[in-house]
Amino acid sequence: MPTKDNIEIERPPLKVPSSGHTNTLPKNYTEVLAVALQTNTVSVPECGKSPIESCIDYPKEQEKQWSDTAVQLFKSDQMTCETTISWAAYHASRQAPIEDLPALRALLPLFYEKSSTPSMIKHGMDLVKQAVDFLNPGQIPVRTAYQPLFALAKYVQLKWPETHGGQSFVVMLGGLHTEMALWKTLGDILEGSGWTTALAESGVASSGTADSYQKVTHLNRTRHAHQVTFLTLRHLMNDAYMLTEEEDGARSFLT
Image 1: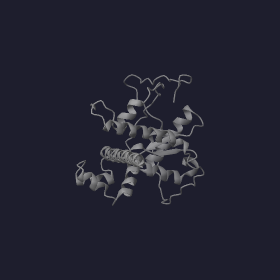
Image 2: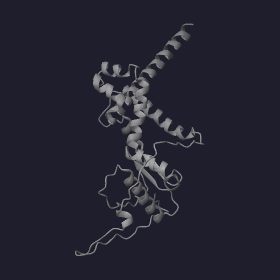
Image 3: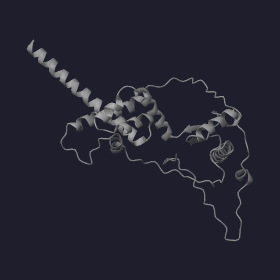
Image 4: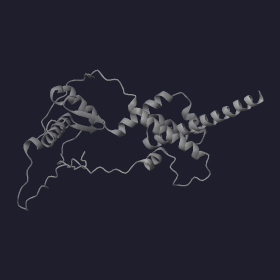
């Protein structure tokens, strides 16, 4: 990413010749070579690094501040439409203005070929690697894809580990599907716990809608349901703690 001290090199734009000239792309760009993925085996390398707890200390503290703020707002009678009680609104209000310079971007010419094919996936990875090597020699390219393109890209890495493996190319699952996978995992954990029944009986959602939260049919609604559940439990825990403190204080006063 560009910074004030290290600004990217802005290259001159391409000039399209006047009418009557034919502009052609090189064959190594336009020709998509056919490939076959005959491997169905998945080889996951062993991770030699243990998770660093210090990396999540700050996010955990931020989440605690959000829940504490929300619990205090529950007790307030002066809530307005500008009150930042939701997770997104709270963190957005605390986010510092970004001073980074905008990155220079480029859109490569599009293809007519179907994207969800091994040939197109491998060809796209080759072109990305060539572009990165041209701009920043030695840099490992990073590509983000959603399903099923992500799965095909991983199979390409398994088929050609020397040129497209994890040591020379990073393929990441998109943030949308990553979050959906996390909510689905949490839904599996909560299955049979009575969570959906509690949501339906409390009027937060209908029975069918509450059941869809476990399958993450709608991401925004699922995220909102978990936030409501978390803040409700946090509020009840806070009330129980305050009630216990009052009872302990009364006992110590009487004794």
